[in-house]
Image 1: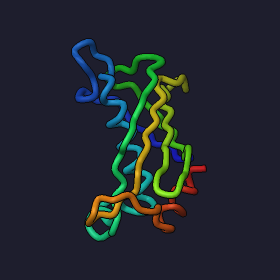
Image 2 (image 1 turned 135 degrees about the vertical axis):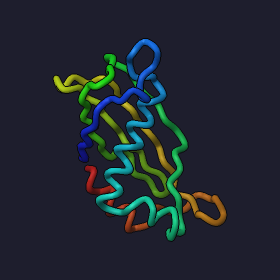
Image 3 (image 1 turned 180 degrees about the vertical axis):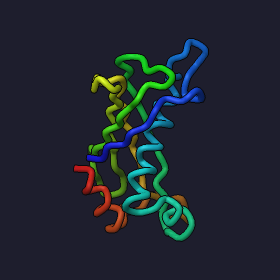
Image 4 (image 1 turned 90 degrees about the vertical axis):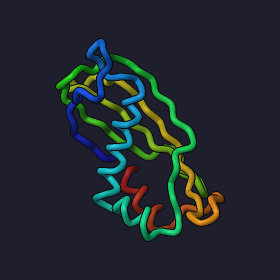
Length: 132
C-alpha cells in the first residue's frame, strides 16, 4: 500500500466548488507518479525504457463531495496482476478518514516501439509488489 497526501486546489473543482468528477482520475495519477518517483521514476520509463504503461480502463465510484482546501489521503493498492496488465485501486479519503471516492485503473505494459502488449518487466513487477 502507498499513501499520498494532498490538498484539493481550485483547478480540481467545478463551478459548484466541489471536485469535478474527472479530476479524481488526475488525483489518482498524481498518486501513481509520486509512488513511481520513489521506486522507478516515470521519467526513466518514458525516456529510456523499452515499455510504457498506458491506462486502458478506468472507473470511479463517488461517495461524498470534496471541496476546495480539503485535505486528502489517497491509498493506492495493487489489485489484479497479470502477465501484461495490472490494476491499481485507489481510495480517496478526507481528513475525517471517510471514503470520498474509489478509483480503479487498469494499465497494460506495451512495447514502446511497436505498441504491442508485452509482459510486465521484472523490475516493474517488483515495484508493484510494494503495493500489496
